[in-house]
Image 1 (tube, rainbow, N blue to C red):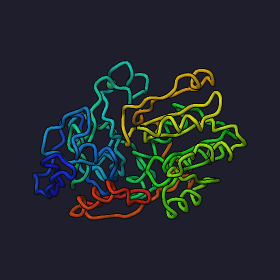
Image 2: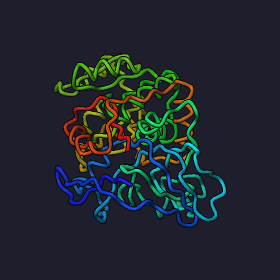
Image 3: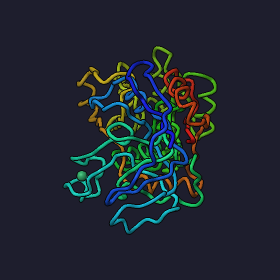
Image 4: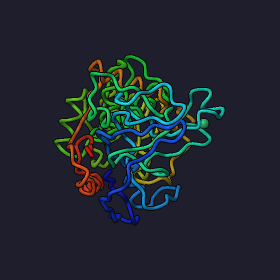
Length: 342
Ligand SMILES: [Zn+2]
């Protein structure tokens, strides 16, 4: 099989398209024929050695995988070759106290697919059978690979980590990002009124098309004032955030009393300072959200199957052009998702 492998970390890293032997499924494992794999910021962090986890190289990146079961290992009873699947990229042990409670993303023995083990920018990927989720007939491989990582992250943030109620104001940061584009649609589907942010006219149009009522440009120095104006000086009930860095204090300026900032990343920086006085006086919350459980993926795919959640795909590229996809995502020249088809 072909595999697009990272052989040296850097900005950019060094990649090679390699011929590797076909994979064999061990006990409890499944080999999936990869039909599509989405690119995410996590892949960029792997490329630049920006993760707290040091991966062994060479490594095949890619965690947002849709495909068909190629073959099954000993003891796998639930899956048959040919079945259409999406892969839960937070590989989980299934045995620790969090897994037993269905909280797979809090697994004490979690392994990141495409970081700690080889991922889906390849013809095949090998995963534990428990990582598979059935792909509904109405969701094609490209849509799944554009939704099941970023989209299910947004689903978890809005339904499990924060609870959005009809009529709430939600600010979804970064309309053109995978998480942002899904968060706008999911918040709307939950009955919320939605604001988003965008840095170009094309990204603004996308936000409006997905259901945002207004779009704010975070390049304006006092953009939180615009959010407060749009919400009748009240502020928003929930912010879906994945940027962090120096922008985080401004995000708190957008938040209503009793409101919640839910964050799943820190693409602009992990170390932040903010003023605790308004935070506790206004009785606000800052909530972390990490990955997803299979239940979040099942929910996301059900929304996609019945048309409530659209995949936003910028481009579909062949495996040989995966390096260009990394460069485009790093340059923030992407509207929605880049999907690789091996
Ligand atoms: Zn576990």
